[in-house]
Image (cartoon, rainbow, N blue to C red):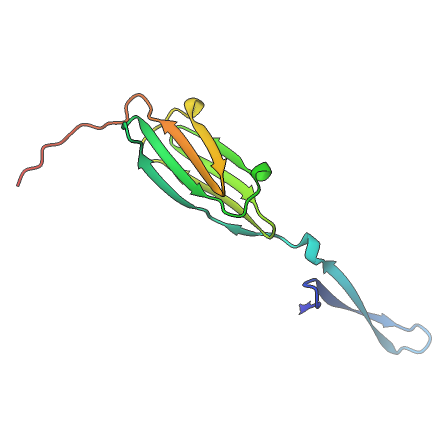
Length: 137
């Protein structure tokens, strides 16, 4: 495939045609543009995240770096054990899912987007603490 100056691509199709009267073969080249820059697929980027227990140990504070994404394009889906986030910028899109170490209550979760940073506060589920095991040494 060859590149056009503006980023579009074209393919050369060769058609063989037999002339019924003379028996000669003719090669016709047809240049056809198959994509243009405006319809080019956006590259997919996985956002950087930071997950911590909140200050009162009642849930998780999740920060998702979505720099360059428009607030209108953001989508967040929370589940008990993970979340998925999507967002689009001019020439890229964020799209990724993450698993959480503790179950949370997704219906009580809250999210805020400010200056490219999505902050999610998700309270822990009913049994988020495990059984403490005594360590011998």
